[in-house]
Length: 246
Length: 313
Image (cartoon, rainbow over all chains, first blue to last red; front, side, top):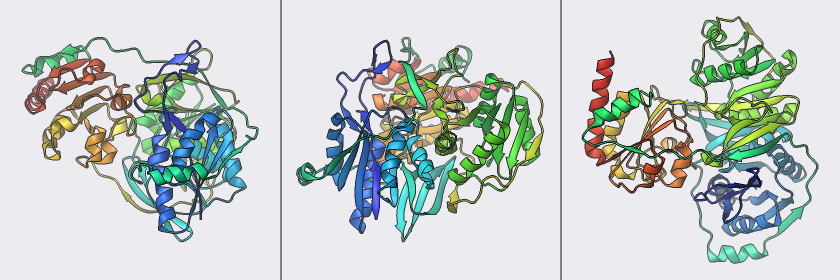
Protein backbone atom coordinates (compact mmCIF):
# COMPACT_ATOMS: atom_id res chain seq x y z
CA UNK A 1 0.00 0.00 0.00
CA UNK A 2 1.02 3.61 -0.49
CA UNK A 3 1.00 6.08 2.39
CA UNK A 4 1.43 9.84 2.07
CA UNK A 5 2.49 11.71 5.20
CA UNK A 6 2.07 15.50 5.13
CA UNK A 7 4.71 17.34 7.12
CA UNK A 8 5.01 21.00 7.95
CA UNK A 9 7.83 22.97 9.48
CA UNK A 10 7.22 24.61 12.86
CA UNK A 11 9.40 26.70 15.16
CA UNK A 12 11.06 24.66 17.90
CA UNK A 13 8.69 24.43 20.88
CA UNK A 14 11.02 26.54 23.07
CA UNK A 15 11.01 29.45 20.55
CA UNK A 16 10.19 32.94 21.67
CA UNK A 17 7.70 34.34 19.18
CA UNK A 18 8.16 37.83 17.72
CA UNK A 19 7.12 39.70 14.56
CA UNK A 20 8.74 42.18 12.15
CA UNK A 21 7.68 44.63 9.41
CA UNK A 22 5.08 46.44 11.56
CA UNK A 23 3.94 43.14 13.03
CA UNK A 24 2.95 41.68 9.67
CA UNK A 25 5.65 38.99 9.40
CA UNK A 26 6.88 36.24 11.70
CA UNK A 27 10.41 37.07 12.88
CA UNK A 28 12.51 34.07 11.82
CA UNK A 29 15.65 35.53 13.34
CA UNK A 30 17.20 32.88 15.59
CA UNK A 31 14.34 30.42 14.98
CA UNK A 32 15.22 26.75 14.75
CA UNK A 33 12.70 24.86 12.62
CA UNK A 34 11.58 21.34 13.42
CA UNK A 35 9.04 18.97 11.86
CA UNK A 36 5.68 19.88 13.38
CA UNK A 37 5.57 17.47 16.37
CA UNK A 38 2.16 15.94 15.53
CA UNK A 39 3.28 15.26 11.95
CA UNK A 40 6.53 13.63 13.08
CA UNK A 41 5.77 11.82 16.34
CA UNK A 42 2.40 10.43 15.38
CA UNK A 43 1.70 10.53 11.60
CA UNK A 44 5.18 9.69 10.29
CA UNK A 45 6.12 7.14 12.95
CA UNK A 46 2.77 5.29 12.63
CA UNK A 47 3.24 5.16 8.83
CA UNK A 48 6.69 3.62 9.38
CA UNK A 49 5.31 1.07 11.84
CA UNK A 50 2.74 0.03 9.21
CA UNK A 51 5.54 -0.24 6.64
CA UNK A 52 7.63 -2.39 8.98
CA UNK A 53 4.69 -4.67 9.77
CA UNK A 54 3.91 -5.39 6.12
CA UNK A 55 4.37 -3.91 2.75
CA UNK A 56 3.98 -0.17 2.51
CA UNK A 57 5.75 2.64 0.76
CA UNK A 58 5.93 5.89 2.75
CA UNK A 59 6.20 9.23 0.94
CA UNK A 60 6.45 12.52 2.80
CA UNK A 61 5.27 15.77 1.27
CA UNK A 62 5.69 19.39 2.29
CA UNK A 63 4.81 22.73 0.69
CA UNK A 64 7.71 25.10 1.20
CA UNK A 65 11.04 26.52 0.14
CA UNK A 66 14.47 24.88 -0.32
CA UNK A 67 15.22 25.78 3.31
CA UNK A 68 12.67 23.14 4.35
CA UNK A 69 14.78 20.33 2.90
CA UNK A 70 16.56 20.02 6.27
CA UNK A 71 13.39 18.81 7.98
CA UNK A 72 12.59 16.61 4.96
CA UNK A 73 15.99 14.91 5.26
CA UNK A 74 15.23 14.28 8.91
CA UNK A 75 11.92 12.60 7.96
CA UNK A 76 13.85 10.44 5.47
CA UNK A 77 16.42 9.64 8.18
CA UNK A 78 13.63 8.47 10.49
CA UNK A 79 12.62 6.07 7.71
CA UNK A 80 10.40 7.55 4.97
CA UNK A 81 11.15 6.16 1.49
CA UNK A 82 10.91 9.30 -0.58
CA UNK A 83 10.12 12.96 -0.29
CA UNK A 84 8.18 15.52 -2.34
CA UNK A 85 8.54 19.25 -1.95
CA UNK A 86 6.04 21.53 -3.65
CA UNK A 87 8.11 24.61 -4.30
CA UNK A 88 5.84 27.37 -2.97
CA UNK A 89 5.16 29.53 0.05
CA UNK A 90 2.29 27.80 1.92
CA UNK A 91 0.21 30.97 1.85
CA UNK A 92 -2.89 29.66 3.57
CA UNK A 93 -4.41 26.31 4.51
CA UNK A 94 -6.47 26.05 1.32
CA UNK A 95 -3.53 26.81 -0.97
CA UNK A 96 -1.48 24.17 0.87
CA UNK A 97 -4.25 21.57 0.74
CA UNK A 98 -4.73 22.10 -3.01
CA UNK A 99 -1.02 21.41 -3.62
CA UNK A 100 -1.02 18.20 -1.58
CA UNK A 101 -4.33 16.96 -2.97
CA UNK A 102 -3.12 17.64 -6.50
CA UNK A 103 -0.04 15.47 -5.95
CA UNK A 104 -2.09 12.78 -4.20
CA UNK A 105 -4.59 12.65 -7.08
CA UNK A 106 -2.05 11.50 -9.62
CA UNK A 107 -0.31 9.02 -7.32
CA UNK A 108 -3.15 6.85 -5.94
CA UNK A 109 -2.37 6.81 -2.21
CA UNK A 110 -4.39 4.47 0.02
CA UNK A 111 -3.84 6.49 3.14
CA UNK A 112 -2.98 10.15 3.73
CA UNK A 113 -1.78 11.06 7.23
CA UNK A 114 -1.34 14.48 8.85
CA UNK A 115 -0.76 15.70 12.39
CA UNK A 116 -3.90 16.94 14.17
CA UNK A 117 -2.72 20.56 13.82
CA UNK A 118 0.49 22.55 13.49
CA UNK A 119 1.90 24.20 16.58
CA UNK A 120 2.31 27.50 14.72
CA UNK A 121 -1.13 28.03 13.18
CA UNK A 122 -3.25 25.57 15.22
CA UNK A 123 -5.98 25.64 12.58
CA UNK A 124 -6.56 21.87 12.06
CA UNK A 125 -7.54 22.79 8.52
CA UNK A 126 -5.34 21.06 5.97
CA UNK A 127 -6.40 17.42 6.62
CA UNK A 128 -10.10 18.17 6.21
CA UNK A 129 -9.46 20.27 3.12
CA UNK A 130 -7.41 17.53 1.43
CA UNK A 131 -10.16 15.03 2.24
CA UNK A 132 -12.85 17.25 0.73
CA UNK A 133 -10.88 18.00 -2.43
CA UNK A 134 -10.25 14.27 -2.98
CA UNK A 135 -13.76 13.28 -1.77
CA UNK A 136 -12.19 10.92 0.81
CA UNK A 137 -13.52 10.29 4.32
CA UNK A 138 -11.67 12.04 7.16
CA UNK A 139 -11.03 10.57 10.58
CA UNK A 140 -9.79 13.43 12.64
CA UNK A 141 -7.76 13.33 15.89
CA UNK A 142 -7.16 9.58 15.73
CA UNK A 143 -5.17 8.10 18.61
CA UNK A 144 -4.95 4.54 17.16
CA UNK A 145 -4.77 3.28 13.57
CA UNK A 146 -4.69 -0.31 12.31
CA UNK A 147 -4.95 -1.70 8.80
CA UNK A 148 -7.65 -4.33 8.31
CA UNK A 149 -7.43 -5.57 4.71
CA UNK A 150 -8.80 -2.70 2.65
CA UNK A 151 -10.24 -0.93 5.70
CA UNK A 152 -8.92 1.06 8.62
CA UNK A 153 -9.79 0.45 12.24
CA UNK A 154 -9.27 3.56 14.32
CA UNK A 155 -9.73 5.05 17.73
CA UNK A 156 -10.56 8.74 17.68
CA UNK A 157 -11.20 11.44 20.22
CA UNK A 158 -14.77 12.67 20.37
CA UNK A 159 -16.20 15.39 22.59
CA UNK A 160 -15.88 13.95 26.09
CA UNK A 161 -14.68 10.49 25.14
CA UNK A 162 -13.21 8.00 22.70
CA UNK A 163 -14.72 6.10 19.83
CA UNK A 164 -13.69 3.06 17.78
CA UNK A 165 -14.60 3.44 14.10
CA UNK A 166 -14.03 1.66 10.78
CA UNK A 167 -13.72 3.15 7.34
CA UNK A 168 -12.74 1.89 3.88
CA UNK A 169 -9.56 3.19 2.24
CA UNK A 170 -8.63 5.52 0.65
CA UNK A 171 -8.98 7.90 3.59
CA UNK A 172 -7.37 10.87 5.30
CA UNK A 173 -6.45 10.55 8.99
CA UNK A 174 -5.25 13.35 11.28
CA UNK A 175 -3.10 11.93 14.06
CA UNK A 176 -3.04 12.80 17.78
CA UNK A 177 -1.19 11.66 20.86
CA UNK A 178 -1.29 7.93 21.57
CA UNK A 179 -0.84 6.75 17.99
CA UNK A 180 2.93 6.17 18.14
CA UNK A 181 6.06 7.11 20.06
CA UNK A 182 8.67 9.61 18.93
CA UNK A 183 11.72 8.09 17.19
CA UNK A 184 15.23 9.49 17.10
CA UNK A 185 16.98 8.90 13.75
CA UNK A 186 20.09 6.69 14.00
CA UNK A 187 23.37 7.12 12.11
CA UNK A 188 22.41 4.48 9.52
CA UNK A 189 19.16 6.29 8.82
CA UNK A 190 20.91 9.65 8.54
CA UNK A 191 23.43 8.21 6.03
CA UNK A 192 20.67 6.47 4.03
CA UNK A 193 18.63 9.69 3.92
CA UNK A 194 21.35 11.43 1.89
CA UNK A 195 20.72 9.22 -1.13
CA UNK A 196 16.94 8.88 -0.89
CA UNK A 197 14.97 10.70 -3.60
CA UNK A 198 13.77 14.23 -2.83
CA UNK A 199 11.68 15.52 -5.70
CA UNK A 200 10.82 19.20 -6.17
CA UNK A 201 7.61 19.98 -8.06
CA UNK A 202 6.10 23.32 -9.12
CA UNK A 203 2.86 24.45 -7.47
CA UNK A 204 -0.52 24.51 -9.19
CA UNK A 205 -2.53 27.72 -9.09
CA UNK A 206 -4.97 28.08 -6.22
CA UNK A 207 -6.78 31.05 -4.75
CA UNK A 208 -5.98 32.30 -1.27
CA UNK A 209 -9.15 32.28 0.79
CA UNK A 210 -7.66 33.82 3.94
CA UNK A 211 -4.75 36.05 4.87
CA UNK A 212 -3.06 37.10 8.09
CA UNK A 213 -2.98 40.91 8.05
CA UNK A 214 -1.09 41.41 11.32
CA UNK A 215 0.02 39.78 14.56
CA UNK A 216 0.45 40.74 18.18
CA UNK A 217 1.86 39.14 21.29
CA UNK A 218 -0.32 39.03 24.42
CA UNK A 219 0.40 41.70 27.04
CA UNK A 220 2.66 40.39 29.75
CA UNK A 221 1.05 39.99 33.14
CA UNK A 222 1.61 42.49 35.91
CA UNK A 223 3.65 41.21 38.84
CA UNK A 224 2.33 38.20 40.71
CA UNK A 225 0.59 38.82 44.03
CA UNK A 226 2.11 36.47 46.59
CA UNK A 227 -0.17 34.99 49.25
CA UNK A 228 0.97 33.62 52.61
CA UNK A 229 0.71 29.80 52.39
CA UNK A 230 -0.83 29.79 55.88
CA UNK A 231 -3.63 32.14 54.77
CA UNK A 232 -5.67 30.43 52.09
CA UNK A 233 -8.78 32.34 53.17
CA UNK A 234 -7.11 35.43 51.75
CA UNK A 235 -6.58 33.69 48.37
CA UNK A 236 -10.23 32.62 48.26
CA UNK A 237 -11.31 36.14 49.17
CA UNK A 238 -9.16 37.61 46.33
CA UNK A 239 -10.45 35.08 43.80
CA UNK A 240 -14.00 35.99 44.77
CA UNK A 241 -13.87 39.77 45.26
CA UNK A 242 -10.91 40.94 43.18
CA UNK A 243 -10.57 38.43 40.32
CA UNK A 244 -14.30 37.53 40.42
CA UNK A 245 -13.72 34.02 39.11
CA UNK A 246 -15.36 32.03 41.92
CA UNK B 1 -28.10 35.42 6.85
CA UNK B 2 -25.91 33.60 9.39
CA UNK B 3 -25.93 29.83 9.88
CA UNK B 4 -24.64 28.31 13.14
CA UNK B 5 -23.89 24.59 13.29
CA UNK B 6 -24.56 23.21 16.76
CA UNK B 7 -23.77 19.74 18.08
CA UNK B 8 -26.64 18.64 20.32
CA UNK B 9 -25.82 14.95 20.72
CA UNK B 10 -25.22 15.32 24.49
CA UNK B 11 -27.75 18.04 25.17
CA UNK B 12 -26.77 21.61 24.42
CA UNK B 13 -23.14 22.23 25.34
CA UNK B 14 -21.92 25.64 26.49
CA UNK B 15 -20.18 25.88 23.08
CA UNK B 16 -23.61 25.95 21.40
CA UNK B 17 -24.75 28.93 23.47
CA UNK B 18 -21.43 30.68 22.81
CA UNK B 19 -21.63 30.25 19.03
CA UNK B 20 -25.26 31.42 18.83
CA UNK B 21 -24.43 34.46 21.02
CA UNK B 22 -21.46 35.19 18.73
CA UNK B 23 -23.63 34.93 15.60
CA UNK B 24 -26.19 37.31 17.10
CA UNK B 25 -23.41 39.89 17.50
CA UNK B 26 -22.74 39.64 13.74
CA UNK B 27 -26.34 40.04 12.56
CA UNK B 28 -30.01 39.56 13.31
CA UNK B 29 -30.88 36.70 10.97
CA UNK B 30 -29.41 33.68 12.76
CA UNK B 31 -30.46 30.15 11.77
CA UNK B 32 -29.17 27.22 13.81
CA UNK B 33 -28.64 23.81 12.20
CA UNK B 34 -28.29 20.71 14.33
CA UNK B 35 -28.77 16.99 13.88
CA UNK B 36 -29.63 13.85 15.79
CA UNK B 37 -32.14 13.02 18.46
CA UNK B 38 -32.29 16.12 20.69
CA UNK B 39 -35.97 16.93 21.39
CA UNK B 40 -37.47 20.06 19.84
CA UNK B 41 -38.35 21.24 23.38
CA UNK B 42 -34.65 21.19 24.30
CA UNK B 43 -33.71 23.27 21.22
CA UNK B 44 -36.25 26.12 21.35
CA UNK B 45 -34.18 27.87 24.05
CA UNK B 46 -31.51 28.68 21.42
CA UNK B 47 -33.87 31.52 20.49
CA UNK B 48 -33.04 33.17 23.80
CA UNK B 49 -29.42 33.48 22.66
CA UNK B 50 -30.32 34.94 19.27
CA UNK B 51 -31.53 32.18 16.95
CA UNK B 52 -34.55 33.06 14.78
CA UNK B 53 -35.09 29.41 13.82
CA UNK B 54 -33.59 25.98 14.51
CA UNK B 55 -33.36 23.40 11.74
CA UNK B 56 -32.77 19.79 12.77
CA UNK B 57 -31.84 16.79 10.60
CA UNK B 58 -33.05 13.61 12.29
CA UNK B 59 -31.24 11.24 9.90
CA UNK B 60 -27.65 12.43 10.29
CA UNK B 61 -25.98 11.20 13.50
CA UNK B 62 -22.98 13.52 13.20
CA UNK B 63 -20.30 10.81 13.31
CA UNK B 64 -19.08 11.36 9.73
CA UNK B 65 -17.65 14.82 8.93
CA UNK B 66 -18.18 14.22 5.19
CA UNK B 67 -21.90 13.59 5.67
CA UNK B 68 -22.25 16.59 7.99
CA UNK B 69 -20.47 18.74 5.41
CA UNK B 70 -22.97 17.77 2.70
CA UNK B 71 -25.84 18.60 5.06
CA UNK B 72 -24.47 21.98 6.15
CA UNK B 73 -23.49 22.93 2.62
CA UNK B 74 -27.01 22.20 1.33
CA UNK B 75 -28.57 24.29 4.10
CA UNK B 76 -26.16 27.19 3.45
CA UNK B 77 -27.35 27.21 -0.15
CA UNK B 78 -31.03 26.78 0.73
CA UNK B 79 -31.12 29.74 3.11
CA UNK B 80 -28.49 31.85 1.30
CA UNK B 81 -26.16 32.12 4.33
CA UNK B 82 -23.12 34.36 3.92
CA UNK B 83 -21.51 33.47 7.26
CA UNK B 84 -21.25 30.03 8.88
CA UNK B 85 -20.26 29.67 12.54
CA UNK B 86 -18.85 26.56 14.26
CA UNK B 87 -17.32 25.91 17.64
CA UNK B 88 -13.58 25.19 17.22
CA UNK B 89 -14.09 21.81 18.90
CA UNK B 90 -13.51 18.28 17.61
CA UNK B 91 -16.50 18.47 15.26
CA UNK B 92 -15.79 22.00 14.03
CA UNK B 93 -12.15 21.09 13.37
CA UNK B 94 -13.22 18.16 11.19
CA UNK B 95 -16.18 19.72 9.37
CA UNK B 96 -15.36 23.43 8.90
CA UNK B 97 -12.29 22.79 6.65
CA UNK B 98 -14.32 20.45 4.43
CA UNK B 99 -17.08 23.04 4.15
CA UNK B 100 -14.46 25.68 3.30
CA UNK B 101 -13.44 23.68 0.23
CA UNK B 102 -16.98 22.77 -0.74
CA UNK B 103 -18.21 26.39 -0.63
CA UNK B 104 -14.85 27.95 -1.63
CA UNK B 105 -15.30 29.99 1.54
CA UNK B 106 -12.38 31.16 3.67
CA UNK B 107 -12.19 29.67 7.16
CA UNK B 108 -11.07 31.61 10.22
CA UNK B 109 -10.16 28.76 12.57
CA UNK B 110 -10.06 29.33 16.32
CA UNK B 111 -11.51 32.86 16.44
CA UNK B 112 -11.37 34.71 19.78
CA UNK B 113 -13.09 37.98 18.70
CA UNK B 114 -15.83 39.30 16.47
CA UNK B 115 -14.68 40.91 13.19
CA UNK B 116 -13.28 44.45 13.58
CA UNK B 117 -14.24 47.40 11.33
CA UNK B 118 -11.97 46.01 8.56
CA UNK B 119 -13.41 42.52 8.88
CA UNK B 120 -10.30 41.07 10.57
CA UNK B 121 -10.85 38.48 13.29
CA UNK B 122 -8.39 37.63 16.06
CA UNK B 123 -7.20 34.02 16.35
CA UNK B 124 -4.73 32.34 18.67
CA UNK B 125 -1.56 31.32 16.83
CA UNK B 126 1.76 29.79 17.87
CA UNK B 127 -0.16 27.73 20.42
CA UNK B 128 -1.29 30.79 22.33
CA UNK B 129 2.08 32.58 22.24
CA UNK B 130 0.68 35.15 19.77
CA UNK B 131 -2.53 36.49 18.24
CA UNK B 132 -3.11 36.82 14.51
CA UNK B 133 -5.61 39.04 12.67
CA UNK B 134 -7.16 37.06 9.81
CA UNK B 135 -9.25 38.27 6.90
CA UNK B 136 -11.31 36.27 4.46
CA UNK B 137 -11.36 37.19 0.76
CA UNK B 138 -14.32 35.04 -0.31
CA UNK B 139 -17.99 36.00 -0.47
CA UNK B 140 -19.02 33.38 2.12
CA UNK B 141 -17.08 33.32 5.40
CA UNK B 142 -16.67 30.50 7.90
CA UNK B 143 -15.62 31.19 11.48
CA UNK B 144 -14.89 28.56 14.13
CA UNK B 145 -15.00 30.07 17.61
CA UNK B 146 -12.50 28.96 20.25
CA UNK B 147 -14.44 27.63 23.28
CA UNK B 148 -14.62 30.00 26.30
CA UNK B 149 -13.88 33.07 24.14
CA UNK B 150 -17.20 34.80 24.82
CA UNK B 151 -19.92 34.49 27.45
CA UNK B 152 -23.38 33.27 26.37
CA UNK B 153 -25.93 36.12 26.54
CA UNK B 154 -29.70 35.82 26.61
CA UNK B 155 -31.29 38.50 24.43
CA UNK B 156 -34.52 36.99 23.10
CA UNK B 157 -37.24 34.39 23.48
CA UNK B 158 -37.79 30.79 22.37
CA UNK B 159 -37.75 30.20 18.62
CA UNK B 160 -39.41 27.66 16.30
CA UNK B 161 -37.79 24.31 15.46
CA UNK B 162 -38.25 22.73 12.02
CA UNK B 163 -37.09 19.41 10.61
CA UNK B 164 -34.96 19.24 7.50
CA UNK B 165 -34.15 15.70 6.44
CA UNK B 166 -32.45 13.89 3.59
CA UNK B 167 -29.70 16.41 2.75
CA UNK B 168 -26.72 14.51 4.20
CA UNK B 169 -26.56 11.32 2.12
CA UNK B 170 -24.92 8.16 3.47
CA UNK B 171 -22.15 7.97 6.09
CA UNK B 172 -18.80 6.36 5.21
CA UNK B 173 -17.57 5.99 8.79
CA UNK B 174 -18.95 3.08 10.81
CA UNK B 175 -18.97 3.48 14.60
CA UNK B 176 -18.03 0.27 16.43
CA UNK B 177 -18.09 1.51 20.03
CA UNK B 178 -18.18 4.71 22.06
CA UNK B 179 -16.71 5.33 25.52
CA UNK B 180 -17.79 8.44 27.41
CA UNK B 181 -16.87 8.72 31.07
CA UNK B 182 -19.96 9.99 32.91
CA UNK B 183 -20.08 13.00 35.17
CA UNK B 184 -16.67 14.47 34.32
CA UNK B 185 -16.40 18.16 33.49
CA UNK B 186 -15.01 18.44 29.95
CA UNK B 187 -11.60 20.09 30.05
CA UNK B 188 -11.89 22.34 26.95
CA UNK B 189 -15.24 23.70 28.21
CA UNK B 190 -14.33 24.02 31.89
CA UNK B 191 -14.42 27.49 33.44
CA UNK B 192 -12.31 26.40 36.40
CA UNK B 193 -9.33 24.05 36.07
CA UNK B 194 -7.07 22.52 38.72
CA UNK B 195 -3.83 21.18 37.25
CA UNK B 196 -0.84 19.45 38.79
CA UNK B 197 2.62 18.37 37.74
CA UNK B 198 5.66 16.41 38.84
CA UNK B 199 5.77 18.33 42.11
CA UNK B 200 3.04 15.95 43.30
CA UNK B 201 5.67 13.15 43.37
CA UNK B 202 3.34 10.30 42.39
CA UNK B 203 -0.12 9.38 41.06
CA UNK B 204 -1.22 8.27 44.55
CA UNK B 205 -1.17 11.93 45.63
CA UNK B 206 -3.84 13.09 43.17
CA UNK B 207 -6.61 12.60 45.73
CA UNK B 208 -6.06 16.10 47.12
CA UNK B 209 -6.12 17.57 43.59
CA UNK B 210 -9.42 15.84 42.88
CA UNK B 211 -10.79 17.06 46.23
CA UNK B 212 -9.83 20.64 45.42
CA UNK B 213 -11.38 20.32 41.95
CA UNK B 214 -14.54 18.89 43.46
CA UNK B 215 -14.87 21.67 46.01
CA UNK B 216 -14.57 24.25 43.21
CA UNK B 217 -16.59 22.34 40.58
CA UNK B 218 -13.46 22.38 38.41
CA UNK B 219 -12.01 20.01 35.80
CA UNK B 220 -8.64 18.36 36.48
CA UNK B 221 -5.61 18.67 34.18
CA UNK B 222 -1.90 17.87 34.26
CA UNK B 223 1.47 18.75 32.75
CA UNK B 224 3.09 16.77 29.94
CA UNK B 225 5.67 14.80 32.01
CA UNK B 226 2.87 13.56 34.25
CA UNK B 227 0.85 12.28 31.25
CA UNK B 228 3.96 10.81 29.62
CA UNK B 229 4.91 8.71 32.65
CA UNK B 230 1.33 7.54 32.95
CA UNK B 231 0.36 9.17 36.26
CA UNK B 232 -2.63 10.75 34.54
CA UNK B 233 -4.54 10.05 31.28
CA UNK B 234 -3.30 11.77 28.11
CA UNK B 235 -6.54 13.70 27.61
CA UNK B 236 -5.73 15.70 30.77
CA UNK B 237 -2.41 16.96 29.35
CA UNK B 238 -2.60 20.71 28.75
CA UNK B 239 0.13 22.58 26.91
CA UNK B 240 1.53 23.15 23.47
CA UNK B 241 1.33 19.49 22.43
CA UNK B 242 -1.73 18.71 24.55
CA UNK B 243 -5.02 20.52 24.99
CA UNK B 244 -5.02 24.31 24.83
CA UNK B 245 -7.49 25.75 27.33
CA UNK B 246 -8.68 29.22 28.34
CA UNK B 247 -10.65 28.85 31.56
CA UNK B 248 -11.57 31.73 33.87
CA UNK B 249 -9.35 30.25 36.58
CA UNK B 250 -6.32 27.98 36.18
CA UNK B 251 -4.68 26.69 39.36
CA UNK B 252 -1.26 25.15 38.65
CA UNK B 253 0.20 23.02 41.42
CA UNK B 254 3.75 21.70 41.34
CA UNK B 255 4.22 22.74 37.69
CA UNK B 256 7.39 24.73 36.96
CA UNK B 257 5.89 26.54 33.94
CA UNK B 258 7.99 25.55 30.94
CA UNK B 259 7.25 27.68 27.86
CA UNK B 260 5.48 24.72 26.19
CA UNK B 261 3.11 24.40 29.15
CA UNK B 262 2.43 28.13 29.33
CA UNK B 263 1.52 28.15 25.63
CA UNK B 264 -1.47 25.93 26.33
CA UNK B 265 -2.80 27.87 29.31
CA UNK B 266 -1.89 31.53 28.90
CA UNK B 267 -5.36 32.30 27.54
CA UNK B 268 -6.64 31.67 31.10
CA UNK B 269 -8.16 34.80 32.63
CA UNK B 270 -6.66 34.26 36.09
CA UNK B 271 -3.72 32.00 36.96
CA UNK B 272 -2.84 30.81 40.46
CA UNK B 273 0.51 29.06 40.93
CA UNK B 274 1.47 26.92 43.91
CA UNK B 275 5.11 25.85 43.96
CA UNK B 276 7.83 25.20 46.55
CA UNK B 277 10.37 26.92 44.31
CA UNK B 278 10.00 30.71 44.46
CA UNK B 279 12.12 30.90 41.27
CA UNK B 280 9.74 28.70 39.21
CA UNK B 281 9.15 30.50 35.86
CA UNK B 282 5.40 29.98 36.22
CA UNK B 283 5.24 32.77 38.85
CA UNK B 284 6.05 35.28 36.08
CA UNK B 285 2.85 34.28 34.27
CA UNK B 286 0.71 34.11 37.41
CA UNK B 287 -1.77 36.56 38.92
CA UNK B 288 -1.59 35.00 42.38
CA UNK B 289 1.23 32.89 43.74
CA UNK B 290 1.73 30.72 46.79
CA UNK B 291 5.29 29.70 47.59
CA UNK B 292 4.81 26.56 49.64
CA UNK B 293 4.51 22.82 49.74
CA UNK B 294 1.43 21.55 47.88
CA UNK B 295 0.94 18.89 50.56
CA UNK B 296 0.36 21.67 53.14
CA UNK B 297 -1.23 24.30 50.92
CA UNK B 298 -3.79 22.29 48.93
CA UNK B 299 -5.73 20.81 51.89
CA UNK B 300 -5.82 24.31 53.42
CA UNK B 301 -7.05 25.82 50.16
CA UNK B 302 -9.72 23.13 49.79
CA UNK B 303 -10.90 23.78 53.35
CA UNK B 304 -10.99 27.54 52.69
CA UNK B 305 -13.05 27.03 49.53
CA UNK B 306 -15.49 24.69 51.30
CA UNK B 307 -15.90 27.28 54.05
CA UNK B 308 -16.48 30.01 51.42
CA UNK B 309 -19.07 27.87 49.57
CA UNK B 310 -20.95 27.22 52.79
CA UNK B 311 -21.00 30.92 53.60
CA UNK B 312 -22.48 31.57 50.12
CA UNK B 313 -25.40 29.20 50.70
